[in-house]
Amino acid sequence: MAEVVLFHHVQGLTSGVVAFADELRAAGHTVHTPDLFEGRTFDSLEEGTAYVRQVGFGEVGARGVRAAAELPREVVHVGFSLGVVPAQELAQTRDGTRGALLMHACIPVSEFGAAWPAGVPVQVHAMEHDPFFAEDAEAARALVAESSEAELFLYPGDRHLFADSSLPSYDPDAAELLTRRAVEFLGALDGDGRNPR
Image (cartoon, rainbow, N blue to C red; front, side, top):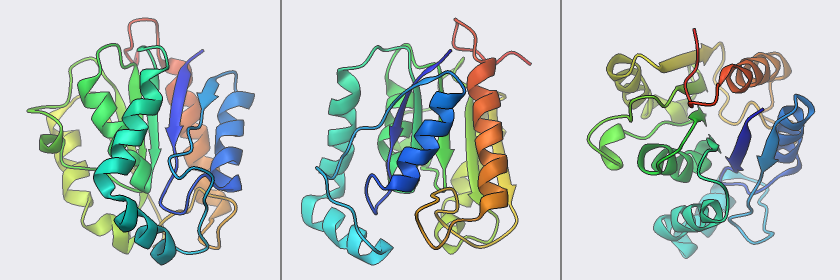
């Protein structure tokens, strides 16, 4: 089974992020959940964003890269919203990456390299009318157009962190489908890091 590093969103390593990691663990995967906020969690996106601005977006991303440095190179990088930044950076730049799951966000590929790396399957998951994802949708569509190993899944609704069961934005139906797709994605990865179809 896959070894996974899961990066949390701007509200921190919430119990809902841990619960999602536990779902992947229950499917037989090893999941690491580094805490980029050093134990802090926030009640709102605004409070979390204020903290990130204080610390610096670059520093939060660097914390994710440092956390992954202690793990084997052959991991799947997973990110919830803000966590997509280190997940995508590592997926695009770290040799040995087996795949990536980008949830609630997608960064333009050009931020971390010339192209999405060949042989690294990736899925992007978001709600189709999420106002936060609206600015990322173009990057997600470009990624899918560029890479034959990229998939975009859009769910009905307008909630941002819909897969975090500890937040008011949680949508159990969409979260269940996302989790099922994530488990299938991880289960399909073979030893070469490819997603057999």
